[in-house]
Length: 494
Image (tube, rainbow, N blue to C red; front, side, top):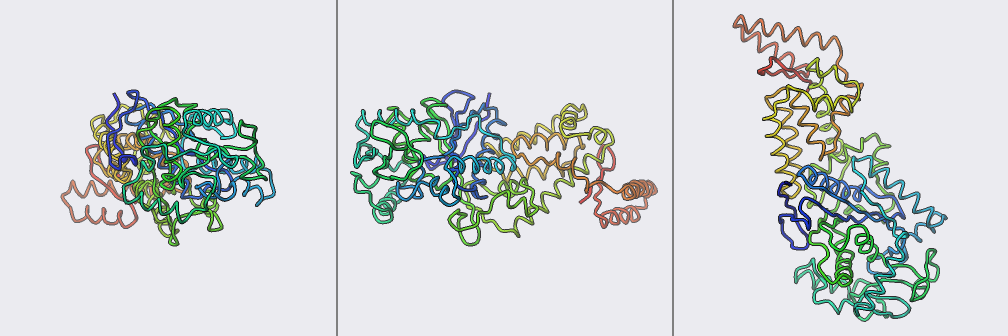
């Protein structure tokens, strides 16, 4: 049976226990990229936290199916149905076709997505694959009286809903209504300020590159409808969790709920998971600022993509996170220290070290060792599961990682727990420890350490505790920490 799992549901504005529609199984939809430009590191933070949520659910016993769209048509430069299609904007900028732009930036996105340790969704669906489904949903909404044709376009009629601002408090509703009234270019074809386009025709954009025949004329779908259709196509009429960034809450996710529940005639998705912004010192990360800081750019500057993942996991997903190279450099140091500690564990036991031929065989050997302390392992795994199932508390999960490395237990147990935690954290500390040639211990240093430990043991046997302490301090000065355990003296580099 799956463990109880709670997280902050944007829809209820509370941390609540997650109860899926089918016991033990989770259907999840996550908004994918609009592939007109590179995904910046703020976008990737959102996908890291979604990946961590999925792996946390799986760690706690749930079977997760995840669907993600690729927006390659219909997303305008304003989320409120104004401006130019972002794909056309990218094509004009680079003098390429829209499909060339979509292919190039989708590949760039998944390169960065993969490099930070994310697992790819079970289903990845480009919007351009689903035009018949979009048209069918629009037709159904028209038949049910939730949509209307005006100025050649098809609009969703928000006045037909009892509640449109489903994510918002009364104060926030007032603020959003002011924003719709004052900040968005007026579309005179709309009956209500909050209505949104389901299908555009040439009356809206005559130069649109991608367009299809429809009952309302040649055109293309609005952005909001694609997520509803792709989700229903692959996950059915009920979705357990819908994910995205906080900037998707309004109007995108608000509109998704409006059209999906009007189309289906019942509640669609009960739980909504949103990650907060990544900021730099000038404000929110944005493609409109000019040069886009991507994971690939960080990699070109010498940063391991998993260091960026580690940086993100040290903060809570609902908190804004500020990026700076200074903080990232500190994260590099912390990450490398963890790798060193793991490597010291490997080198502290000859039988463990002997298995370190390659990552996969080493992990298999660690998982099957008979000297793992099952009680200690379970204790730490239970604490870890408690942390990640409590609103995805990744900072506490990282603390537990440090705790197991300091724990009074043998190296095999520590490595087994690090391996277990990595099912969620995906930091690959063991893999990096095995591959880091620069971290190989100098044979002379290793011989010195072993001789010093023997001398210290002799001093303690002779009750010369001052000399024993002096040897310990000399080792510490050389970056070697020793610890007396039940299995004898253990040492590691610090």
